[in-house]
Image 1 (cartoon, rainbow, N blue to C red):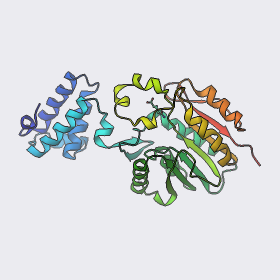
Image 2 (image 1 turned 30 degrees about the horizontal axis):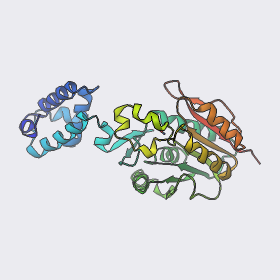
Image 3 (image 1 turned 90 degrees about the horizontal axis):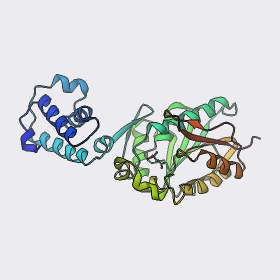
Image 4 (image 1 turned 180 degrees about the vertical axis):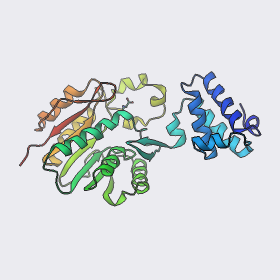
Length: 295
Ligand code: GLN
């Protein structure tokens, strides 16, 4: 399929042509992807595509569709091609330096909200830190739910920090969010009521076995947890134990086989682990919660 071939076709025919091409290339959801890519190229939503089904594609649009199609055929995820992804009902911009936020990570948000709601110490302002914030997904989801909260996100990547700042701005919560470029929690001081993190936790040697869409497109800095996958927790857990206010919570995402060891690391750092790990929608123990002793 070339740009020249698409130009002059109707939107409907171009969509079907692209869907057939994606299917041929082994893409799992060709119809949906074709609709999303053509919609983005023409700036039309679902309804817009239906309404304008008979209008002709002009050459400049055909060029954009073709470049999107090439990327998708090379298994670049739709969210990366479109440059944004929905997380916790928020539309987040992405960049090369950020993971595409996963539905699994919404389990961190759920666990943090439950922690706040079940701990009576959280009456006034809540101070949140998000270590390795990426697009800002977890922090911004929490700030969107907890109107009395303020938060700081850290990331080692300047590009990720810029993306998270842009997202805070676009969501109208920049006045309650600040971002610091640093390694894990190194740039944080003072006390936090909640510390959240989805750190890199994949064993270095396992990166090659990940789904190609993840392996070839997500930043390895955000995935690679070192030889045994626990490098980030060895840094974050002791840092958090020093930064948590009395009664405060450390809420972290973990890999499918890591919850027991991370719970033990939290206990070794002096935190209590008040309840078993929280499972994600696939039933995997996904989130571990630790609590600083109270006053
Ligand atoms: N859940 C991601 C994956 O399986 C990994 C994210 C991370 O390392 N924090 O690809």
